[in-house]
Image (cartoon, rainbow, N blue to C red; front, side):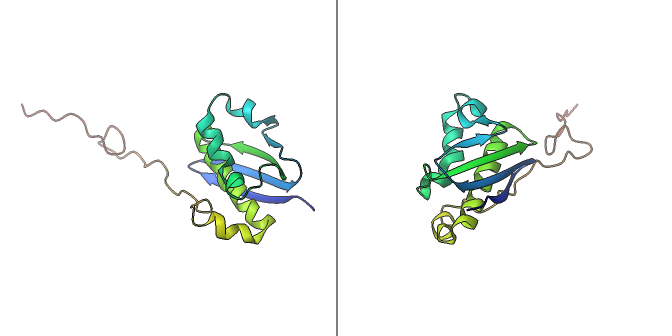
Length: 129
């Protein structure tokens, strides 16, 4: 089977995912998932969640590149991309992934800073006198 391509997004991070049937290798930016995330086990579980839900941990190979944002946003973008690629790989996975919310793009982004404020909503300290 040929490679399947999907894109995942979260905040300002983008993940490009290529999926093909194989032995369960997961490569991110040219290194393994363990090297890419180090000792962050909770984030690793978030990335592999779509694979464990669909029971495809040992039957598909994934090659991904991520850019923009931080490691946590990149991991969530990767999760989104893997979910979309799995649906293209086998349409039956949609019924499993959709109820878990894995196909929905998390649209929350940083709110812009407003003038007269210190941050987006934080106003300067009020002085009565």
